[in-house]
Image (tube, rainbow, N blue to C red):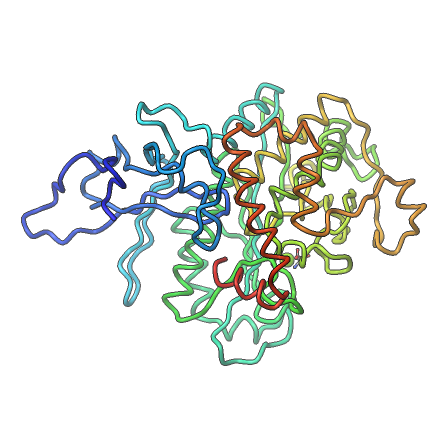
Length: 454
Ligand code: GLU
Ligand code: MG
């Protein structure tokens, strides 16, 4: 395929001629099915790609995870876009044996005149953040990732064990180092509960970079795993019987003066009135949010009771069965409010991080607008409550299939209204294809196919 994909090329010839070996820069976007795609140019042509970006095709946004273009979509074979680099994301992972350095720049999707394209996921988050700003708030967030890392040989080591960690050295140390180079600011890297399961957490950051870091973390991990001959999968359920891989979004709110606003030690769970309303908005819209945050058929093999994922829409304090969990992280410098955050446990790696975070913000804002009361705290296993108790506490079971979450989205006019019409239509087309797969494949086959992509 040509660089331009039908005339939208870089717009110039390489300036790095004269026999100089070209190193490449990858200009990237992450689409509705959370796959990061893009095009490369000679990195020393920055005067060209830095200014004009590179061509892109609108119908690429209608790709499902298995390379079919879903219909209907608004574009078909028509149209041209640009992948416009956001130079603040420019990063290079140094070369390692058998791999050249990885130079990547995350991009916005724009029309040819440089205006934002209606379906650009980064723009979706940017506008949600701008509206949050309008409400006098800022968000700090981070995506905590679980993944499965296998070499096809070794039997699983015990959960959380030193052996499970050391068996994956020097990979884990090098991954940590490379994530630092990539400015992801990794915090903890650990063997998790599941067989061959690992987790990386990173420090919270304000605004758009939180979602950028999720993309970078996944891609750098894939790159490093590939270089080391491991197969890695972030799929929410790599096998029907194994542990699920969650992507937990931790977030906290700050006011315009950058002071924490979520913590009030006098209130239940220490949740301030504003944070309570924000949380209530998220819970109110959570069934529809599942279509964005848990948007694949395998997501629903993960979201089952008693698996520490998030089967019930409820708020819990340090409760890993609650979809929204109050976390009292150790205070930095003795300041409880700064360590205090909420964890949204619904998300997985089949979700686009920009859409998942943007929709979370919009749901929270709706709760603030409607001054919703703080939800009751559910501190035990919601599955163990009687139906009556669940009703009293407003605890609902989340959708149990992609088809059901798409129905919840169809029924939630407010959530649908957050998405530009072409984006919503395309998302529904893509997700209908994926939901249909669930009906035609066994759980084993479904898990296998998603694990191969994610
Ligand atoms: N693996 C669990 C999930 O699917 C999360 C376990 C935990 O870290 O609490 O979300
Ligand atoms: Mg975990």
